[in-house]
Amino acid sequence: MKPSAFAYARPRALEEAFALLDKHGENAKLLAGGQSLLASLNMRLAAPEILVDIGAIPGLDGIAVRGQTLVIGARTTHRAIERSEAVAKHAPLLAQAAPHIAHVAIRNAGTLGGSLAMADPAAEWPACCVALQATIVVTSKKGERRVAATDFFKDLYTTALGAGELITAVEIPCVEKGERHAFLELVRRRGDYAIVGLAARARLKGKTLSGVQLVYLGVGVTPVQAKGAMAALEGKTADDAAIRAAQDAIARDLEPNADIYTSAEAKRHLARVLVARAVAALVG
Ligand SMILES: Cc1cc2nc3c(=O)[nH]c(=O)nc-3n(C[C@H](O)[C@H](O)[C@H](O)COP(=O)(O)OP(=O)(O)OC[C@H]3O[C@@H](n4cnc5c(N)ncnc54)[C@H](O)[C@@H]3O)c2cc1C
Image (spheres, rainbow, N blue to C red):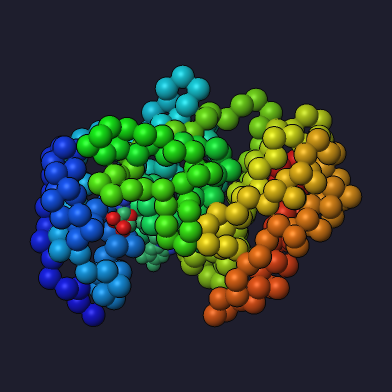
Protein backbone atom coordinates (compact mmCIF):
# COMPACT_ATOMS: atom_id res chain seq x y z
CA MET A 1 0.00 0.00 0.00
CA LYS A 2 0.99 3.61 -0.32
CA PRO A 3 0.77 6.14 2.52
CA SER A 4 -1.79 8.94 2.66
CA ALA A 5 -0.45 12.26 1.38
CA PHE A 6 1.64 14.19 3.90
CA ALA A 7 3.72 17.33 4.03
CA TYR A 8 7.42 17.09 4.86
CA ALA A 9 9.67 19.44 6.82
CA ARG A 10 13.37 19.16 7.60
CA PRO A 11 14.11 21.70 10.34
CA ARG A 12 17.71 22.81 10.91
CA ALA A 13 17.31 23.54 14.63
CA LEU A 14 15.42 22.10 17.59
CA GLU A 15 13.42 25.34 17.97
CA GLU A 16 12.11 24.96 14.40
CA ALA A 17 11.05 21.38 15.19
CA PHE A 18 9.26 22.51 18.36
CA ALA A 19 7.44 25.24 16.39
CA LEU A 20 6.23 22.63 13.88
CA LEU A 21 5.11 20.26 16.64
CA ASP A 22 3.29 23.16 18.30
CA LYS A 23 1.57 24.19 15.10
CA HIS A 24 0.44 20.73 13.97
CA GLY A 25 -0.05 19.00 17.33
CA GLU A 26 -1.11 15.37 16.99
CA ASN A 27 -1.10 15.69 13.20
CA ALA A 28 2.70 15.91 13.14
CA LYS A 29 5.05 12.92 13.43
CA LEU A 30 8.77 13.04 14.02
CA LEU A 31 10.80 11.10 11.48
CA ALA A 32 14.18 9.63 12.48
CA GLY A 33 15.41 6.47 10.71
CA GLY A 34 11.95 5.76 9.32
CA GLN A 35 12.34 2.00 9.87
CA SER A 36 9.15 1.70 11.91
CA LEU A 37 7.29 4.87 10.96
CA LEU A 38 7.39 4.44 7.18
CA ALA A 39 6.02 0.91 7.44
CA SER A 40 3.14 2.13 9.58
CA LEU A 41 2.41 4.93 7.07
CA ASN A 42 2.48 2.45 4.20
CA MET A 43 0.07 0.19 6.07
CA ARG A 44 -2.06 3.25 6.88
CA LEU A 45 -1.79 2.58 10.59
CA ALA A 46 -0.82 6.25 10.85
CA ALA A 47 -1.77 9.17 8.61
CA PRO A 48 -0.01 12.32 9.86
CA GLU A 49 -0.44 15.64 8.04
CA ILE A 50 3.26 16.33 8.27
CA LEU A 51 6.51 14.47 8.90
CA VAL A 52 9.11 16.46 10.81
CA ASP A 53 12.44 14.93 9.80
CA ILE A 54 14.98 15.41 12.61
CA GLY A 55 17.90 14.37 10.36
CA ALA A 56 19.32 17.87 9.88
CA ILE A 57 19.16 19.07 13.49
CA PRO A 58 22.69 19.38 14.86
CA GLY A 59 23.72 17.77 18.16
CA LEU A 60 21.37 14.78 18.14
CA ASP A 61 23.83 12.08 17.25
CA GLY A 62 27.16 10.82 18.48
CA ILE A 63 28.53 8.90 21.41
CA ALA A 64 30.55 10.58 24.18
CA VAL A 65 31.85 9.77 27.64
CA ARG A 66 31.23 12.54 30.17
CA GLY A 67 32.74 11.66 33.53
CA GLN A 68 31.20 8.32 34.51
CA THR A 69 28.35 8.60 32.01
CA LEU A 70 28.07 7.38 28.45
CA VAL A 71 25.91 9.81 26.49
CA ILE A 72 24.37 8.61 23.22
CA GLY A 73 22.50 11.04 20.99
CA ALA A 74 18.95 10.02 20.11
CA ARG A 75 19.63 9.97 16.38
CA THR A 76 22.63 7.63 16.71
CA THR A 77 21.97 4.58 14.58
CA HIS A 78 21.84 1.02 15.89
CA ARG A 79 24.84 0.28 13.70
CA ALA A 80 26.94 3.13 15.10
CA ILE A 81 26.24 1.82 18.60
CA GLU A 82 27.14 -1.71 17.52
CA ARG A 83 30.49 -0.53 16.11
CA SER A 84 31.44 1.94 18.82
CA GLU A 85 34.54 1.23 20.90
CA ALA A 86 33.23 3.51 23.65
CA VAL A 87 30.02 1.48 23.86
CA ALA A 88 31.93 -1.82 23.91
CA LYS A 89 34.05 -0.49 26.78
CA HIS A 90 31.50 1.43 28.85
CA ALA A 91 28.17 -0.27 28.08
CA PRO A 92 28.99 -3.77 26.79
CA LEU A 93 25.35 -4.85 27.18
CA LEU A 94 24.45 -2.55 24.27
CA ALA A 95 27.27 -3.95 22.16
CA GLN A 96 25.99 -7.48 22.84
CA ALA A 97 22.38 -6.55 22.06
CA ALA A 98 22.90 -4.53 18.87
CA PRO A 99 23.52 -7.44 16.45
CA HIS A 100 20.13 -8.89 17.49
CA ILE A 101 18.27 -5.87 16.07
CA ALA A 102 16.86 -6.73 12.65
CA HIS A 103 19.44 -6.77 9.83
CA VAL A 104 22.38 -4.53 8.96
CA ALA A 105 20.39 -2.47 6.42
CA ILE A 106 17.82 -1.64 9.09
CA ARG A 107 20.48 -1.04 11.75
CA ASN A 108 22.19 1.43 9.38
CA ALA A 109 19.09 3.65 9.37
CA GLY A 110 17.18 2.94 12.61
CA THR A 111 18.03 5.04 15.65
CA LEU A 112 18.21 4.67 19.41
CA GLY A 113 15.69 7.48 19.97
CA GLY A 114 13.29 6.03 17.40
CA SER A 115 13.38 2.64 19.06
CA LEU A 116 12.77 4.07 22.54
CA ALA A 117 9.95 6.33 21.32
CA MET A 118 8.38 3.42 19.46
CA ALA A 119 8.55 1.29 22.64
CA ASP A 120 7.96 -2.03 20.94
CA PRO A 121 7.82 -4.56 23.79
CA ALA A 122 10.00 -6.98 21.81
CA ALA A 123 12.69 -4.38 21.01
CA GLU A 124 16.19 -4.66 22.41
CA TRP A 125 17.04 -1.06 23.43
CA PRO A 126 14.16 -0.49 25.87
CA ALA A 127 15.06 -3.60 27.91
CA CYS A 128 18.77 -2.70 27.84
CA CYS A 129 18.04 0.86 29.00
CA VAL A 130 15.99 -0.44 31.94
CA ALA A 131 18.69 -3.00 32.87
CA LEU A 132 21.40 -0.33 32.70
CA GLN A 133 19.30 2.15 34.70
CA ALA A 134 19.68 4.65 31.90
CA THR A 135 18.14 8.10 31.84
CA ILE A 136 16.21 9.33 28.81
CA VAL A 137 16.77 13.02 28.06
CA VAL A 138 13.55 14.55 26.76
CA THR A 139 13.48 18.07 25.30
CA SER A 140 10.68 20.46 24.40
CA LYS A 141 10.34 24.21 23.94
CA LYS A 142 10.08 24.40 27.75
CA GLY A 143 13.56 22.88 28.15
CA GLU A 144 14.99 19.54 29.15
CA ARG A 145 13.74 16.89 31.55
CA ARG A 146 15.24 13.56 32.48
CA VAL A 147 13.18 10.41 32.83
CA ALA A 148 14.53 7.19 34.34
CA ALA A 149 14.21 4.36 31.83
CA THR A 150 12.30 2.41 34.51
CA ASP A 151 9.58 5.12 34.36
CA PHE A 152 9.68 5.76 30.61
CA PHE A 153 7.79 2.76 29.20
CA LYS A 154 4.17 3.09 30.27
CA ASP A 155 2.17 0.65 28.19
CA LEU A 156 2.11 -1.03 24.78
CA TYR A 157 3.83 1.44 22.39
CA THR A 158 3.25 4.12 25.01
CA THR A 159 5.95 6.17 26.74
CA ALA A 160 6.31 9.11 29.10
CA LEU A 161 6.81 11.44 26.10
CA GLY A 162 4.32 14.29 26.13
CA ALA A 163 3.05 16.56 23.35
CA GLY A 164 5.80 18.64 21.76
CA GLU A 165 8.60 16.56 23.30
CA LEU A 166 11.35 14.61 21.67
CA ILE A 167 14.10 12.37 22.93
CA THR A 168 17.46 14.07 22.48
CA ALA A 169 19.86 11.70 24.25
CA VAL A 170 20.26 8.73 26.54
CA GLU A 171 22.59 8.77 29.54
CA ILE A 172 24.02 5.47 30.75
CA PRO A 173 26.18 4.96 33.84
CA CYS A 174 29.54 3.57 32.68
CA VAL A 175 30.20 -0.04 33.59
CA GLU A 176 31.95 -0.51 36.94
CA LYS A 177 34.74 -2.90 37.87
CA GLY A 178 33.42 -6.42 38.46
CA GLU A 179 30.19 -5.78 36.54
CA ARG A 180 29.09 -8.42 34.07
CA HIS A 181 26.48 -8.29 31.32
CA ALA A 182 24.65 -10.82 29.20
CA PHE A 183 22.13 -10.27 26.40
CA LEU A 184 20.29 -13.30 25.12
CA GLU A 185 17.28 -13.82 22.92
CA LEU A 186 15.33 -16.53 21.17
CA VAL A 187 13.97 -15.86 17.69
CA ARG A 188 12.29 -17.84 14.95
CA ARG A 189 14.78 -16.57 12.35
CA ARG A 190 17.87 -14.39 12.79
CA GLY A 191 16.86 -10.74 12.49
CA ASP A 192 13.27 -11.26 13.61
CA TYR A 193 11.90 -9.52 16.66
CA ALA A 194 12.57 -11.65 19.76
CA ILE A 195 10.03 -14.21 20.96
CA VAL A 196 11.63 -13.75 24.37
CA GLY A 197 14.84 -11.91 25.24
CA LEU A 198 16.74 -11.04 28.38
CA ALA A 199 19.07 -8.18 29.29
CA ALA A 200 21.02 -9.22 32.38
CA ARG A 201 23.54 -7.46 34.52
CA ALA A 202 25.24 -8.13 37.88
CA ARG A 203 28.36 -7.48 39.88
CA LEU A 204 30.42 -10.55 40.51
CA LYS A 205 32.71 -11.10 43.50
CA GLY A 206 34.12 -14.59 43.40
CA LYS A 207 30.95 -16.41 42.35
CA THR A 208 28.61 -14.16 44.36
CA LEU A 209 26.14 -12.00 42.46
CA SER A 210 24.92 -8.56 43.53
CA GLY A 211 23.14 -5.62 41.90
CA VAL A 212 21.30 -8.17 39.77
CA GLN A 213 19.11 -6.83 36.96
CA LEU A 214 17.03 -9.18 34.80
CA VAL A 215 14.91 -7.36 32.24
CA TYR A 216 12.87 -9.33 29.73
CA LEU A 217 11.62 -8.32 26.31
CA GLY A 218 8.77 -9.97 24.44
CA VAL A 219 6.86 -11.09 27.53
CA GLY A 220 4.70 -8.07 28.37
CA VAL A 221 3.49 -4.73 27.08
CA THR A 222 6.73 -3.05 28.23
CA PRO A 223 10.17 -4.30 29.25
CA VAL A 224 9.64 -6.43 32.37
CA GLN A 225 11.98 -6.47 35.37
CA ALA A 226 11.80 -9.99 36.81
CA LYS A 227 11.95 -8.77 40.40
CA GLY A 228 11.39 -12.14 42.10
CA ALA A 229 14.16 -13.77 40.08
CA MET A 230 16.43 -10.77 40.72
CA ALA A 231 15.84 -11.19 44.47
CA ALA A 232 16.43 -14.94 44.23
CA LEU A 233 19.92 -14.33 42.83
CA GLU A 234 20.88 -11.27 44.88
CA GLY A 235 23.79 -11.97 47.23
CA LYS A 236 23.78 -15.64 46.23
CA THR A 237 26.49 -17.89 44.86
CA ALA A 238 25.71 -18.50 41.21
CA ASP A 239 25.11 -22.24 41.50
CA ASP A 240 22.39 -24.67 40.40
CA ALA A 241 20.26 -24.01 43.51
CA ALA A 242 20.25 -20.23 42.87
CA ILE A 243 19.40 -20.76 39.21
CA ARG A 244 16.51 -23.08 40.14
CA ALA A 245 15.20 -20.49 42.62
CA ALA A 246 15.36 -17.79 39.93
CA GLN A 247 13.56 -20.07 37.47
CA ASP A 248 10.82 -20.78 40.02
CA ALA A 249 10.39 -17.05 40.62
CA ILE A 250 10.02 -16.43 36.86
CA ALA A 251 6.70 -18.29 36.97
CA ARG A 252 5.40 -15.60 39.35
CA ASP A 253 7.23 -12.62 37.79
CA LEU A 254 6.00 -12.94 34.23
CA GLU A 255 2.53 -13.00 32.76
CA PRO A 256 3.30 -13.17 29.07
CA ASN A 257 0.59 -12.91 26.45
CA ALA A 258 0.40 -15.52 23.75
CA ASP A 259 1.04 -14.27 20.23
CA ILE A 260 0.16 -15.92 16.94
CA TYR A 261 3.22 -18.19 17.10
CA THR A 262 3.92 -18.81 20.78
CA SER A 263 1.69 -19.66 23.72
CA ALA A 264 2.06 -17.88 27.07
CA GLU A 265 3.26 -21.12 28.65
CA ALA A 266 5.94 -21.60 25.99
CA LYS A 267 7.15 -18.02 26.54
CA ARG A 268 7.36 -18.63 30.28
CA HIS A 269 9.38 -21.77 29.60
CA LEU A 270 11.74 -19.88 27.28
CA ALA A 271 12.15 -17.18 29.93
CA ARG A 272 13.22 -19.85 32.42
CA VAL A 273 15.72 -21.23 29.89
CA LEU A 274 17.14 -17.75 29.33
CA VAL A 275 17.66 -16.98 33.01
CA ALA A 276 19.77 -20.13 33.41
CA ARG A 277 21.81 -19.22 30.33
CA ALA A 278 22.19 -15.63 31.53
CA VAL A 279 23.58 -16.66 34.93
CA ALA A 280 26.02 -19.02 33.19
CA ALA A 281 27.09 -16.17 30.90
CA LEU A 282 27.44 -13.69 33.79
CA VAL A 283 29.82 -15.97 35.69
CA GLY A 284 31.48 -17.53 32.62
C1 LIG B 1 12.03 -5.66 9.00
C2 LIG B 1 12.28 -4.92 10.28
C3 LIG B 1 12.73 -5.64 11.38
C4 LIG B 1 12.95 -4.99 12.58
N1 LIG B 1 13.42 -5.73 13.64
C5 LIG B 1 13.70 -5.10 14.81
C6 LIG B 1 14.21 -5.82 15.92
O1 LIG B 1 14.48 -7.02 15.85
N2 LIG B 1 14.42 -5.13 17.06
C7 LIG B 1 14.16 -3.79 17.18
O2 LIG B 1 14.37 -3.21 18.23
N3 LIG B 1 13.68 -3.09 16.14
C8 LIG B 1 13.44 -3.71 14.96
N4 LIG B 1 12.96 -2.98 13.91
C9 LIG B 1 12.64 -1.54 14.12
C10 LIG B 1 13.88 -0.68 13.97
O3 LIG B 1 14.79 -0.95 15.03
C11 LIG B 1 13.55 0.82 13.99
O4 LIG B 1 14.70 1.44 13.55
C12 LIG B 1 13.18 1.46 15.31
O5 LIG B 1 12.13 0.82 15.97
C13 LIG B 1 12.68 2.88 15.09
O6 LIG B 1 13.76 3.71 14.87
P1 LIG B 1 13.74 4.74 13.69
O7 LIG B 1 14.89 5.64 13.94
O8 LIG B 1 13.70 4.02 12.42
O9 LIG B 1 12.40 5.56 14.00
P2 LIG B 1 11.22 6.04 13.04
O10 LIG B 1 10.66 4.88 12.30
O11 LIG B 1 11.65 7.21 12.23
O12 LIG B 1 10.19 6.53 14.16
C14 LIG B 1 9.56 5.61 15.02
C15 LIG B 1 8.68 6.38 16.01
O13 LIG B 1 9.48 7.10 16.92
C16 LIG B 1 9.22 8.52 16.85
N5 LIG B 1 10.53 9.14 17.02
C17 LIG B 1 11.64 8.92 16.30
N6 LIG B 1 12.69 9.59 16.83
C18 LIG B 1 12.21 10.24 17.91
C19 LIG B 1 12.81 11.08 18.90
N7 LIG B 1 14.11 11.38 18.88
N8 LIG B 1 12.02 11.57 19.88
C20 LIG B 1 10.71 11.25 19.94
N9 LIG B 1 10.08 10.48 19.03
C21 LIG B 1 10.83 9.97 18.04
C22 LIG B 1 8.58 8.72 15.49
O14 LIG B 1 7.74 9.85 15.47
C23 LIG B 1 7.79 7.43 15.33
O15 LIG B 1 6.59 7.51 16.05
C24 LIG B 1 12.74 -3.59 12.70
C25 LIG B 1 12.31 -2.86 11.59
C26 LIG B 1 12.08 -3.51 10.39
C27 LIG B 1 11.63 -2.70 9.20
